[in-house]
Length: 178
Image (cartoon, rainbow, N blue to C red; front, side, top):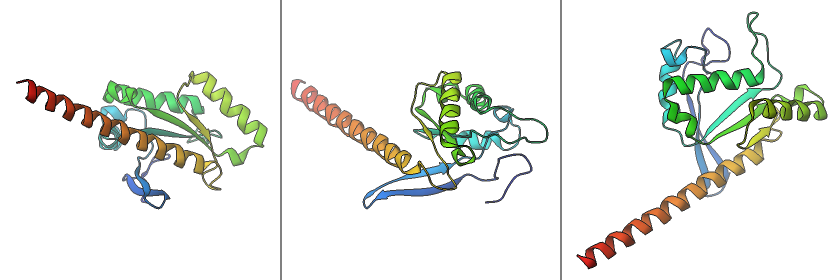
């Protein structure tokens, strides 16, 4: 993808299909990193935030081994809080969406150190939703996320189908009683 002139951002969201197994897949949108002030129009943030508004599940992908960008480094928890702040400023309802935390670059640490770091980040954030520790480059830990996301969407579809059936049954009863 084309890269913008600021850290960790690309110029356009990228869509892809994740095929978990034959007949089971979901669409994923890679929304580039948001910079501070995105909700106020900084960078391309407001364009990206419109895409985020349409999603049903947000995966926050955050490096546990943060890099120093031009002398300004945010801790992984600080990165999550910065994203949450931009979401809140743009549309507070976006924070009500299911949000999962994906802590990346576990391969840059010893296994026990990566696990301890991840647990400390989760504790610092008071994170109560699902979280995962991965190495995206090595695809380590990514399959469980794929399966969990697919299960999430499968359950969502089942719930929507059940709600539609209930609404149809209610409408049928109401028309008979009229």
